[in-house]
Amino acid sequence: MIRTFSTHNIRPQEELTGCLWEFSACQGEFANKTYQVATPSCWENYPDFSGYRGEGIYKTSFQASGNIRLEFKGVSHTATVTLDGKVIAHHYNAYTSFSAIVKELPEGVHELKIKADNRFSEASALHIPNDYMSYGGISRPVVLEKLKDVYIKYVHVTPYTKKGSWNAKIVIAVENIDSRSHQITLKTELAGKSLEWDTVDIGAESELILSKEVAFDDVEVWAPENPKLYNVVAVVREEGMEIDDLIDRFGFREVKVEGKKIVLNGRTLRIKGLCRHEDHPQFGCALPYSAIAADIEITKHLGANSLRTAHYPNDEIFLDLCDEQGILVWEENHARGLSVENMKNPNFRPQAEQVIREMIPMHYNHPCIYIWGILNECASDSEYGKECYSKQFDIIGELDTTRPRSFASCKFKSDLCLGLPEVVSYNIYPLWYHDTPVEEYLKDLYEWVQKETEGSGKPFLVTEIGAGGIYGYHNSYNSKWTEEYQAETLEKQITAVMSQPGCSGVYIWQFCDIRVSEEWFWVRPRTMNNKGVVDEYRRKKLAYNVVKRLFESYQTYDEK
Ligand code: ADA
Image (cartoon, rainbow, N blue to C red):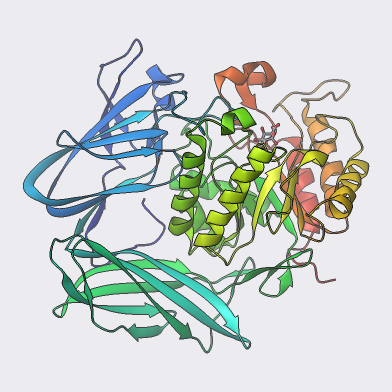
């Protein structure tokens, strides 16, 4: 499955993954042995490669001719792509998609090879040994499309209210890949409104960005309790022929920050969420549709209204499902716990900034995303770190002015960046990493932010809080790592956060147990992060019913 809905009626599109590809490793004891493997997948799920860190080559072939576009939704973590032996794309980072256009392909069968590399080195500033796993493989779909000379790159819809009624700005990017100019006409339909656009000339090998404003009389809003989605359909015509199209979905909803409140469609939000990694013992980070859907079912069953994509952009299928099911999403660029030294890797700034520039245009229309996050627990307590945070918030501001920005800090009272984002967020672990009573710790931190920092008067989120609990582990004194300790601790933590005046909500760390890098074995029993409310197989721990009981007792809106 590519998306949960069809994005084209005119442009021919087929998924090249969803079948067996040839795989061979470049290093290690099984190098150059050939395997037939299902894709999308991670090689850690192939019997000979469960711990393999190296390069692997995937190969398939397809029949095509003319102009083609190949889209790679996710290759972990560095990809080099060749078509018929010629390099057509190179991409760093497992969590954002990239594409390649090949013009005038001769008729015939063509060989596509993707070399994936999940090694750690100076070349990789974001995928480093960490408290989550950097897998290897083709982790998300690969899609083959056939193009004419002009195609639609993206359609962005920005709904907004004016004098109490709904409007939308629609922006369409069209690209001419031909060496000659073309004369084209656009036609769009969104939420039942058809728009004719003027005929325009698009120059040789150039891009055109066109926009229109539209007013609507009677539409339903998108909200957690009513996740109403509308299609936007854009069609390119040339000489009366429809030559390309793009279909996307959007929702009529507005997110604003008003003082200390995060406001959705005029109502104050109370977040009751969980942080979720894309991780599964059978699929690595390449979760299939049914596994993603099952995680969202659990999320709803827990009474949660939000998921935080810790710590990277997520699969579009996940976002499609959150749009459809009314789950609010905090989506963030890829980073976890990078020190000043890590951030001074010359690859860090370009790589981290590129994730933002890829994530936002690709995910712009998803109504479920209500906030953009960056740089989880990086060096926001240093002047150099502050420069990096500031630049990345500026990039978000260039790409999207409709959503608030934030970052999850672990720097307690030494953070220097609280003046940068619209929303202040902290990861805190009272009763786990330190045995301070939760209320006392949170009140002290919250009041420091209000009295001493530029984060004063802003919405305040607890973006991580939790405790470890090993599935099935119990003892006579309910020590740390028992399910009992985790359940008792979450009870105190959630209650304290949700009763802290001025706090907009909580994200539990974390949804499920996850695999971590081998290098973290000494601080992670089972070489896993065991703070899930369910274990890696989504088996409920004692904490599950505590979270469910508490979350179901809180409303999504604060009507006070
Ligand atoms: C941090 C970090 C998470 C995870 C967590 C933990 O807050 O953001 O990724 O490592 O700590 O389990 O300690």
